[in-house]
Image 1 (cartoon, one colour):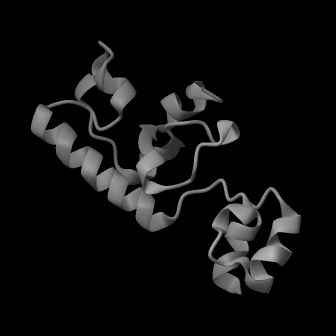
Image 2 (cartoon, rainbow, N blue to C red):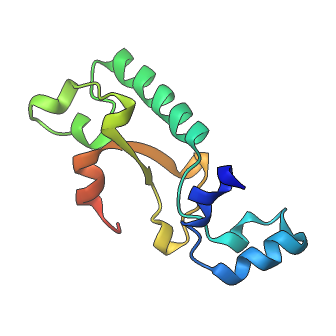
Length: 113
């Protein structure tokens, strides 16, 4: 149970836990988990970084379209946050296809958009 403790703190619908545990394990949406799995974050980071390096731009997509000193900066994984492309609060899933890595500054500025 230790591995699931951090995830359970991110569950927004506690009633969904019971249905999930009692046989709904195929439907993870019952848990309303807002966080991305570490493997998704790492894979997204690697993909974005490789593409950014090939273009000579920042691996933060919002920095890359800017004009400042960070336009071509490659951030380390620990300097970035996983972001929902389609906001979680607007039914955006915590899935690989809805994940992008943003620098901490841009992720916090983006908010609920």
